[in-house]
Picture 1: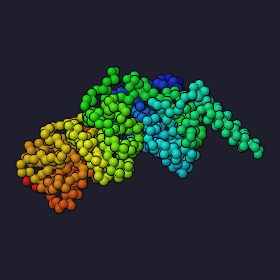
Picture 2: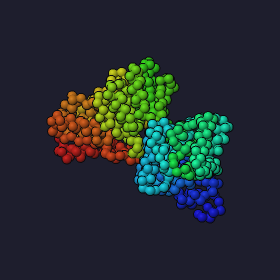
Picture 3: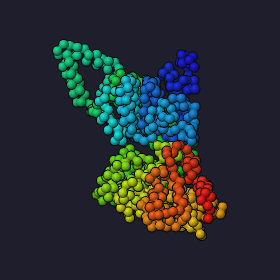
Picture 4: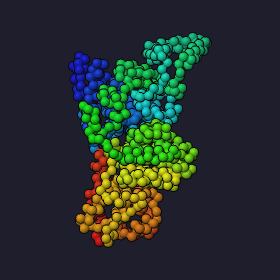
Length: 630
């Protein structure tokens, strides 16, 4: 390996001790490594799915970071974590990278339990500056002089936590460096060639060294030196403010460097070395191209941001997505909004993920993309609702968690009418713990006067959405899973009301709702073939739970509730409490999820947590034998 490094020959990742040997490479050798990494990214994500374009854009940046800093002694925090694939490859996980997002494989997000180079879990957005601020302060208390580096994508800059953190940490004397990966929007306005000249001048190490020497020499002049130095600085700042617009980062107390070409390793490293020399909070603005190095991703970076398996040559997805709950939701909302000008649609930077692209094409003037700002989205919706509009906020279950206070304080207390389209409810699969939609039910049921629907098919989704918009009041949620419907049950069972599917003389009742009702329906057939007669209850409006329904459930000696939700605070827990309070003395059990669900396919997770038809049938058989079959 050393002969390659010493002679400057072409080198590959497998020959390197990572990340230490990266510092020994020539710039030309780094280019070979970057090409190899892009090949790994494209080949792997084409098979596993994942976030491609964002990672292709940070290859040189990530390499430069690891050449300039010493991980894990220097702490690198990624925001959002989906741009950390290259970081994983460069920190000893290249040989395992083929397992990306697979069960028991490499996570698609930073994960401290996976590597000591992954400093903090970051599946949600806009958290890095807060984390880095805390780490920097902890290292100061502990007497450490290492650096904390927060790498934040420009999209995450739309989240309010960023500015709360900037306000808190910018004036601390800590070794904190924020790298803004700007791959889409212009943050600082260009003022022509003068701006380019001054940016180059301010960013040069020679200039900074000269500036410091001048200030030092002036300060050493007896009596007047300090005043002269301050005067020079004031003149400089006045000229800078006159000629240039100060940017937000400088106004909030950071030293600002940039913009820097994010695909020029020498330029990035020069800026990072300069940032290290200040020993105070610095913002380094890096411009990158999303999807760099793979033409389909460069042309359509949004389409390749999060993608399923695809054909590398054509760039086409391996399997067409076709219809999905998201698409049905989006199209149905358009059909209502075209006839009703009160309806407005809101997304937090997830227009395509939530099916609102259809709304955007038809009624763009009433579609609001607020950026990665779920808290603002909810309170903004409250403002719309207070003026008689009907806001519909389409949001992933996992991201809705960020807006609990706004739902409670700004919507529910005032009785304002907001419709939530909760996408990716339940198990989502390969994105793992940070993205599973298992907590929306316990969260929402804790808010008084909330109504929740959980459809089991597209047709039910359409019915639920109409009911939520026109018949219900206050906070109303319609929750549905990722992907497409799977319906084995008779279409006559589609209903907004809870319905019983009965066999003769059964004293056992299976309860379920949402996607896994279909599995419960199939389990009922499997059990009947084994001579176990069960009735089935399908809930659609799952909350609030009417007392009348509890009275009907009490008629059964044995009740089993299967629920694709976390255990504490679930509907099944509430039904159990209501049964107990009503004097029920039968056998009541429930199957739900406990703890955080790790990455795997949806099918594997459903089986593991007892939500497949065979697992349901097996559980009921065991329960029947334990309690005496009748």
